[in-house]
Length: 201
Image (cartoon, rainbow, N blue to C red; front, side):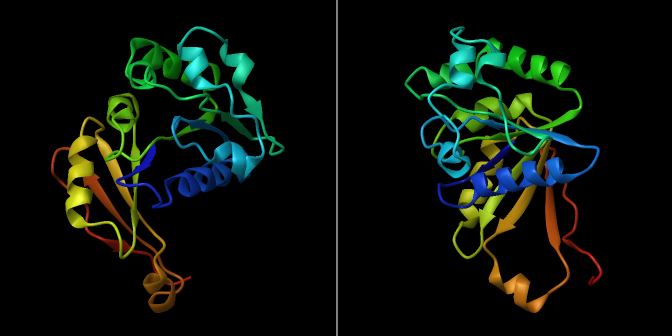
């Protein structure tokens, strides 16, 4: 699952690029599930229909096969969000959502499933999905996301046992440490890894 604290920090961009990175591998497949029903930008970015999707499947109005979209990348499929509404938080936190994810992992066991959710400080949807996923990528906007927002977001998402932080829109790392990368891993149990950097390429 990919989320952020606030809108505009780059979570959808990160989720899409993560899915495309998996799909570009020779022996890997990816499914990008759009769970941001209120402010979905994937249909506009990808030029796909966005009027029906996971919301319709959870509501029992459509079958999964009715809404899955195969992209022009053979290894990448999209599950759009569909139209939002006041009933969406209940649907995403329902038993049907857990059953749907279980169905996806069984039917598409050869695929990495990436879920793009609303920002966790703007919607309860990310917190509802946190217990259902194996890992969360929490996107942080360089020079913008506040420490208090990060801490509040991590608390909100603590039902997931593994949360990784991804620093986005950072020009400092690009100029000062060209050819290396860094990441920080947060554990729900309170432990963490040290900041690590790869050797320069």
